[in-house]
Length: 251
Image (cartoon, rainbow, N blue to C red; front, side, top):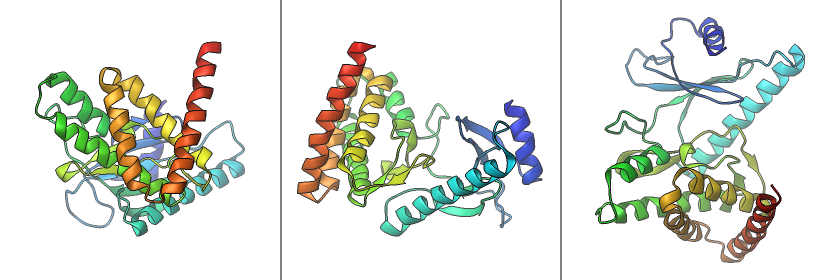
């Protein structure tokens, strides 16, 4: 199935080298060393929303176009606000294609420097006495600040996980993957965003999750500079956690 989708994309952007690095329910993500405009070897990221055969072609085209436009608008606003995310290079809305800059670096195990991979690398190679512990706390706080600034501007990521944050030079976090993003000022939506991240951290970094989540919320408080609205979100987060625990108990 993936090979067929890659072949379809190759027909839409011929003569472009593609390396599939991620596949989700809605889109595929590729790395390429071919720039669409310049003859340089600077890597790019290409996100592609393939058509869905179960949808009527006209409806599918409309949905693909609208979702791609929505994601690009979200990224554009992030850039205008100075919230770190990849810069957009070019787009093809009808075909669901977004070209963006490659950000981050490669870890020693050749994994891309997502927040998740970076934490996994340290967890595997470090120990309780590792001097990098302070660095981990620093980065977690920076990630929390980033999310706080996002929510301060009534922007909801929709899929906050440690995979959807990339560390660049000096371990500065950048947000990626805005396929489920939206705009909302409701404390409930922001609390759900935080809860999704909290659960993702507990799932993928279970041994150190308590410390990570504590540091993330510390940074969130620093980034969400409207204190009254911050308190509303945290109060609602407690409610969301309670609902989540009840669902877990009921199976």
